Image 1 (tube, rainbow, N blue to C red):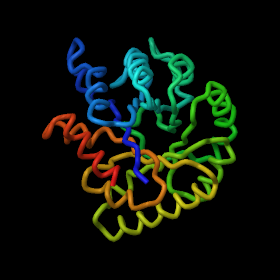
Image 2: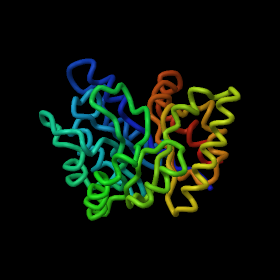
Image 3: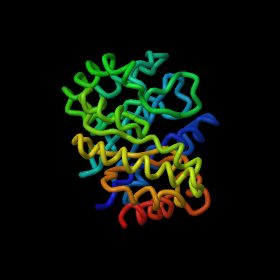
Image 4: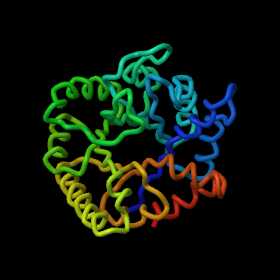
Length: 250
C-alpha cells in the first residue's frame, strides 16, 4: 500500500508574509507540488493569519477542485474565533468544501500544533461540529496522540480518520526512545484499523525519519510542510516533492 503525500503550504505563505506583495506565490507553489505528483495540498489557517490567509484557502480549494483526484485538506481549531477577515474554520470549510477537514486543538499562542485532542474533555464539544461538517460531505480527521483509549473515543465521536501527531517520534528518532515510540504508534494504528478509522500522520516528518514510520501498516496519508520546504531550499520544490513521493510509494 502506498501512502498519499499532501504538501502543507504554510511555510511558503510564511515566507511571503515577511514582505509586502505576493512573492512567493502560494498558488503557484501549489501548482508545482501537484505537477510533481503530490496527491493533495494542506493548509492550516489561523486567526492571526501568520501564514495561510483566507484568500489562499479559497484559491487553493479551486486549484484542487479543477485537478481530478487531488484532495484539499484544511486543518485548524474549530473553536478558534473569527478575527478580522478570518471568518473562522467552520465558515471557511462551509465555503470551500475541502475533501478533508483535520480538527486540531491548537491555541492562539502556540507556535505550532504540539498535541492531540484529549477527548475526555472535548468529545461533547466536538460531536456536533463533526456532524455539522460531515453534513457538508467533508471527511473528518482528528489530530490525536498515539493513545489507544483516545483513538477509540475518536471513533465514538464520529470521526472518519485520525491524524497521528508524530512530533515525539521525530524528536527522538534514532534513539532507543524513538524506537519505543515507533512501537507505540504501530499499536495505535492497529487500534485505529480495528475501529474502522483511516490513519493519517504528520508533524516533523522528514526524509530521514519517514521511511521507518511508514513501516507501520495502513498509513493512508502524510501531511508534510516544514521539512519539505527546507529540503526545497536545497533541491528545488519539484525535486523535494518527488523525493518524499519516492518514500511514500515504496
